[in-house]
Length: 106
Length: 113
Image (cartoon, each protein chain N blue to C red):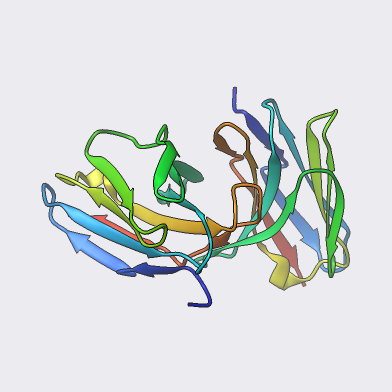
């Protein structure tokens, strides 16, 4: 069993749709990270969370420590949001989810 | 510098040769991480430095892999006697501290032929 589980693995959405990507983890953590990787591109750190909610533009990340769950939301999705989104947790060790591949169709 | 710098950006090496990959973190960032991403695979954690010490080496795949960091700044990842399965993009990231957000470098694409 992976310490970090993401769902869905693949997601296709129409431009403008509201998107949610989920991340559940089974280990104790000090922080949770959401990362973005565009096809052929580098990895960008979107958020680091230890509690509550953060918002950057159209991106919102939430975390529920008690439930060991985080969500990444994208409002008014756009084709340029097409990327792989990776959930990672840091605690005693570092664990990564396998990523969610998002395709936003115009 | 303004970002995390990795060199070389691309490296092609013959099987059995040793390679050194370099990471120059953001100035003042005490935490430094090495990861790798094999083709079509997810991110794999390799090693974490806090200052010059490596409290977590659990991700190094074999004793052919080693890493060091001197002066709390530049880090080198060394792979001895490279094998074809070592081919991957090796990524470095740094942060002010383990509990702060990461900044990633653009990676070194290693191809072992």
